[in-house]
Image (cartoon, rainbow, N blue to C red):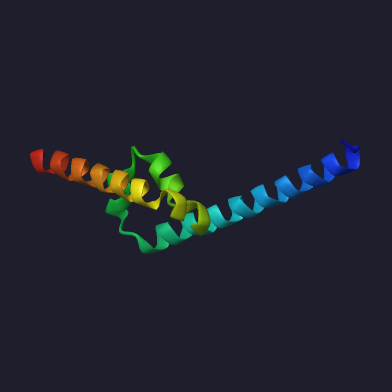
Length: 85
């Protein structure tokens, strides 16, 4: 493969990663500004779940059913733990 093609591909991947990073930071700021602090306490041990909330729409739609089911299971488990305290 021509080195110029490789360089073009690498630049495009870096651009897309930077764009994803920017959108994820904006999403995290939105969560912080709009979600009750208890949401973060409840999800505190589930940082991967929080990160997945910041997926772009197309990616989220491909995993939505499984993701929502997993989040609900986590919230139910945390509620049960809180009820026992």
